Image 1: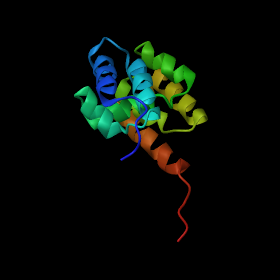
Image 2 (image 1 turned 60 degrees about the vertical axis):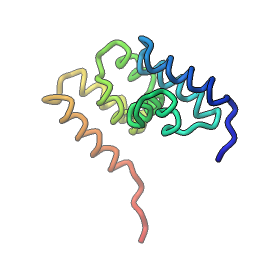
Image 3 (image 1 turned 90 degrees about the vertical axis):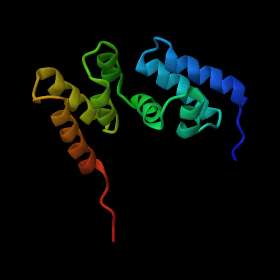
Image 4 (image 1 turned 45 degrees about the horizontal axis):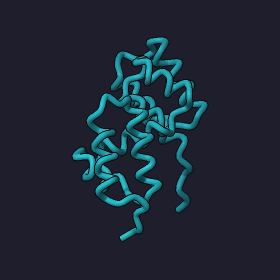
Length: 129
């Protein structure tokens, strides 16, 4: 068990507030990041917030977005599900994806997610045998 810098009862209150308030997904991720820094993992945060691990992970991943992608998300121009896929990419490829999405190069979010996943695979270093 790791040492927690914020007591569980306080962490629970923080996590619950982030999850139930009218917080933006980015703000929610920022709050969860504070709890991560205090020694909680995504599963523990989800339990504290009365949420699920996927939601917490998604919000935390959004913090990896380039600033222009964060702005697009906050302005409703980039769907949150697609933003998770984009956040896994390098900054130049995030820009590429955002530009293509805003131009309407995809038939929908699912096609854009598949494209972002393919880019992500290409960005991964080859494992040597």
